[in-house]
Image 1 (cartoon, rainbow, N blue to C red):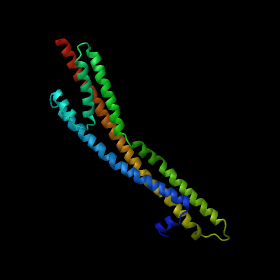
Image 2: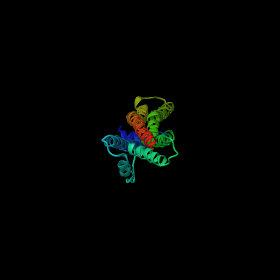
Image 3: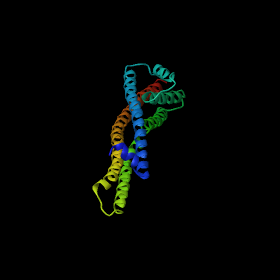
Image 4: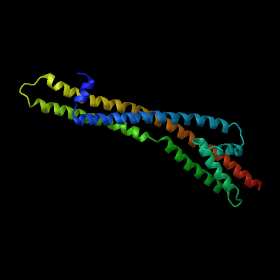
Length: 224
């Protein structure tokens, strides 16, 4: 009894279960590699931008540099959204510092929500694969064992050789279910932790950047 022989001789239902699980496993591994790359780049970009931001560079020059790029994400997107709204509202002499800061913070909160949503893409699918794959595999196992015992009841003399192939092919479904679920659960937990770290870093930046903008708004009002 080879594994390939058992797979080919399995019932249609068990084969369908195995195909579903293999498809879910392939899809989850594809998303795992993609999320790993995205989150790694996000962590690297956040560190680079923070180093540049706190190096004492002029905010207007930094904004012009960031705006010149076609595609920006992470802290750069939050910085651009906040500074753009701050500059727009600050040009109006009628705007009070509180109103200017409220607009800038609102823009950064929207940007923060979008960035977190981007980072969490595909994570719900990994959680789904990790939670339901064992049950799908278990369904295939139960179905295969049930068919084996039904066939066993139709003969006069039962032997282990008669029921063993059916049970073996049924257990393969559970094994494939675990093979699909375990990497998905591990990846989901790891990526969720990385997203939490990035979100915390983004929130801290928004608060610190808000303080800087608030000081500028107050100083400009006092100078006027």
